Image 1 (cartoon, rainbow, N blue to C red):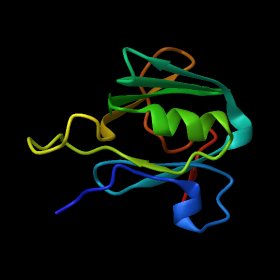
Image 2 (cartoon, rainbow, N blue to C red):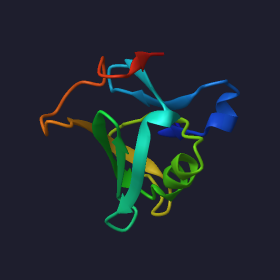
Image 3 (cartoon, rainbow, N blue to C red):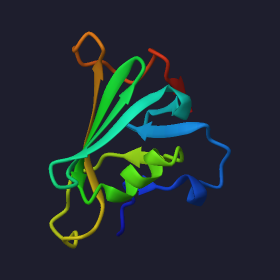
Image 4 (cartoon, one colour):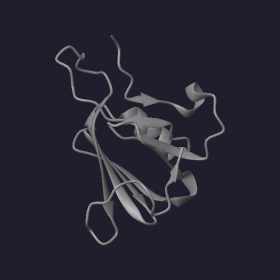
Length: 118
């Protein structure tokens, strides 16, 4: 069984106006592209830091280059965290964790604070 941790906006065939973040329990939150201030790809493509006007979202995983390219062009798709199975090839994109940090440096849920439920 293949599990998709990232779906590009083009593949979604949707008129989304921002990135869609999906929590492990299936809760979905949309953050508009216009709120993104900066995107950084760190730790040899294993950490993606997205700085929004109200929070920072850190995405941990493997081979996050594709997500970085999409967010840099203003076309972030849907990102979903999943535990890393033992059979994932070395060069395959995988998202293991999504953490949201409020501007006050405390962790928050994606609900509220400028996010909308999708």
